[in-house]
Length: 121
View 1 (cartoon, helix red, strand yellow):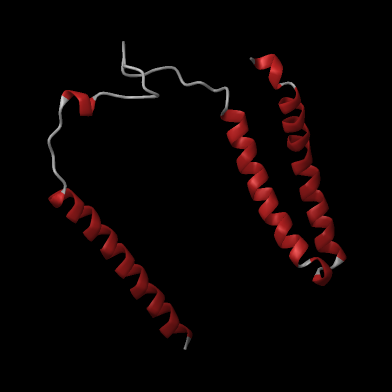
View 2 (cartoon, one colour; view 1 turned 135 degrees about the horizontal axis):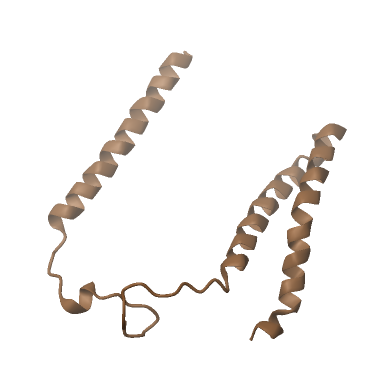
């Protein structure tokens, strides 16, 4: 019985892969190709490109992006923990408390950085 279910998963995965390849090939065959100078130039935020093709990357918002990802994953784990709170044992609660000890310092940093955001302007 388990081998049949595994075979169905393999067949389904093969169908997904084949449909993926078919969509890529079909889009290459059907899509129009008429590049022009305007279409091939780089464009960002309404500014005309000048100089080299590579520009400086502003790292100002990069820490916020990383903190958002960390807090998003942490919230996902905490919602799952809260949903199963009464059925978990003490050992699992200790694991979640260790997780919170790892997650809370970046939260404190984010709150501090948000409070000091006026200095960055």
